[in-house]
Length: 249
Image (cartoon, rainbow, N blue to C red; front, top):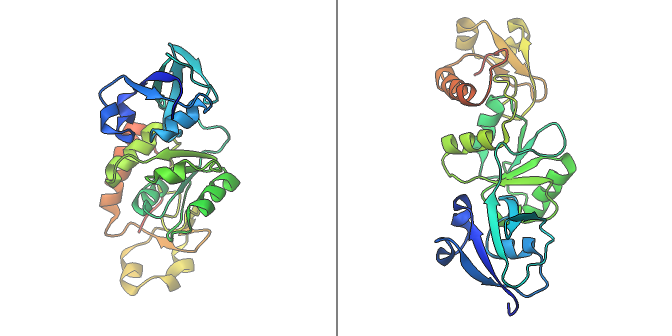
């Protein structure tokens, strides 16, 4: 670029996206005089999904603002909890976030997940078609204009990922109401009606079951229930209230 020079200051939460020499605070940026502020921000490595309020000399401006010489631009982080247009709040996760998807479903959050890599264009189109918030650690995917809404998942650790998403979007929690395998709704199931799906030991040891209305998978309070219950209790304690509980396998 060879045009007006502006001063840029990036919120601490967003400095991981920019070059090291821009992480110290206010730094100069030379623009081309015609690109929007949104383009400038993205060219520095910050996905617009992560940019909150943009300020020029202390006043809010839209992403369409054309920066002028000498302006001080501040890029703030997204305000939490983040309000997403439209309802209900639903998510779409890419192929690398399977554990996060299952944990969101465990909490009753609508979380579609692609277990195979269908490609960025298809994911972005699906986000737009179904009006789902795209969750990803792929900055390139989040820069696609087609996505309905998106968010960068900052950690690679499932526990931290879950807290990040719940803290950012504050979705309503309804634990034990959604199938962790396919995202379908769970309903109470009579033992006799699902017995043909159960091993003999399970039939003898358990009496309370739930079944997915979409894929037919059966759930009960099995060997992993204590670990899953701990995830639910921690999330509910910090981010919401628990609804009626159904059994889980």
